[in-house]
Length: 292
Ligand SMILES: Nc1nc2c(ncn2[C@@H]2O[C@H](COP(=O)(O)OP(=O)(O)OP(=O)(O)O)[C@@H](O)[C@H]2O)c(=O)[nH]1
Ligand SMILES: [Mg+2]
Image (tube, rainbow, N blue to C red; front, side, top):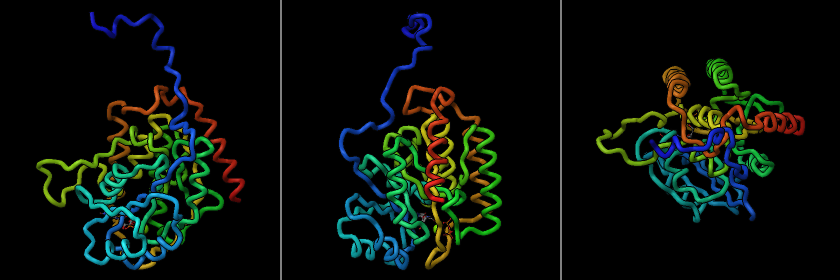
């Protein structure tokens, strides 16, 4: 007889009681993680608006321009790290692994995410959200950057995720988010060097599908999500690293793989259906009203 079979009858029905994720008794510390590949001309716009009292980690994607030099000049206290493989997803995984803050903000380096919105994300976390998700499609949000093809793809991919996972996301493929560090247990992103991995090879989650991967895993774990209106500006300089078709297909594959994948390790002991999911989504409407 195994240990597990000695459990008292009905024990499974009594979930272990835990505080909500990261119930801190002091002012939470904040880390900002910035993936950057050849963004030297955009960085001055980003750093000019970043808050001072937080840890900033820039993950350089083997930039061939002056990204690292410019970063260190603009923000001498910054931590600059490299990444273990290729792609924005891998950059974020490496940045998150290096971050020490209680709250972690992920923000792009091309000037399209407004750092002035960071307090809005942090306020959502302070109000009890585990994950504060930026959305361009809430009242108060918007985009000067999204093309028709991306908007359409995002809309349908978003709908599929909502149908499959019972979520109410309004902007699946958006990279401006903040979360409690305990969410990392659920995201289980792989930052480690992988033996036998060819240079330039991308593992699953290393690409732009990372945002979908994160959103789906957060939903599967039943964590509290609050969407926050966000306005996406046009990339100031340089070219996009994203391909709407190939990256769209990676997103679609992510949704499929995560659906059939085994249950993930979760940061809480309570399943999705057992959480007060309505609470966070109710907060979503409060935020929306405030923004409107
Ligand atoms: N470190 C690292 N950063 C990357 C990589 N690919 C993209 N990024 C960064 O990730 C952020 C988002 O990438 P973008 O190329 O702007 O993608 P996008 O926002 O979908 O495209 P645009 O709308 O045209 O800006 C930017 O800060 C990029 O510099 C990479 O392979 N490594
Ligand atoms: Mg961009």
